[in-house]
Amino acid sequence: MRIDWEEGFEIGTTMGDGMVRIAANKEGLVSLANILLALAEESPGSHIHLDEDNSLEDGSCELVIERV
Image (tube, rainbow, N blue to C red):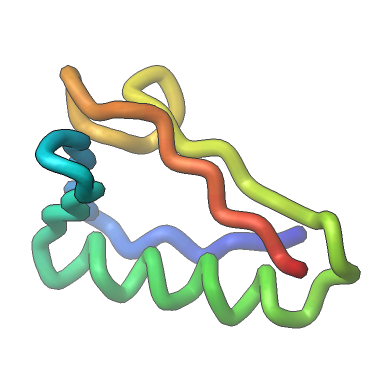
């Protein structure tokens, strides 16, 4: 799967109080939209893992997005 990341993207995630919060700048939101569009074209079961070692800001919780 090819993902187009916007230059200067910032994406962070937190989890608490029964919710997941995704906070991103404009470039981060466009990058997330690109991920969703790319994943929509994949087969069911395809997924992407994002964490602080892979694209998310330090201190972020892991985010898994899956095509069902």
